[in-house]
Amino acid sequence: MAGGESWRPPRPCEDYWWEWKHCRGLRHAFHHYYAHGELPLCDQWREDYEACQAWLRDRSAAAQEALCKSERARVMEKQKYAPVWTFRKSPPPDWYLPLDQDKPN
Image 1 (cartoon, rainbow, N blue to C red):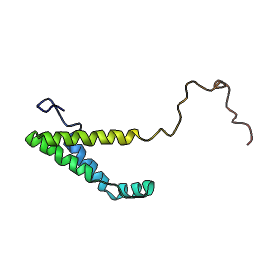
Image 2: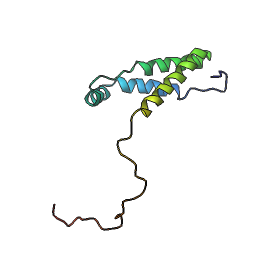
Image 3: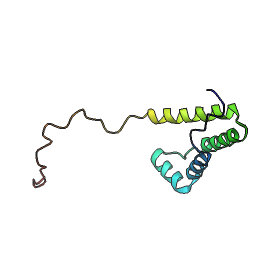
Image 4: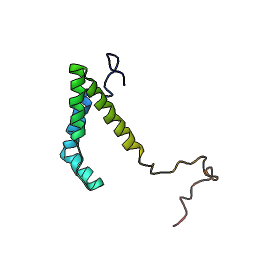
């Protein structure tokens, strides 16, 4: 990854700060625990915020690489889950027929 003036962090530094604050919030922690059975890990957001600030302050290559690595890991984490619904290639053969709303179950 080439450093320099043209590179910018993937997100504004404030985004990392607000994500960290949101992650540590009671409501998010409760929801995450309910959905996943464990408390959320928020340290990476704080580390990303500090790396972003270090890059803005010093144009540090290490901070730049840390941010890129972290964002790549987030993208890979999102991609490892399959979609819940299967996408269909074409509509059902009887898509134009009226719905059977008046039929008793």
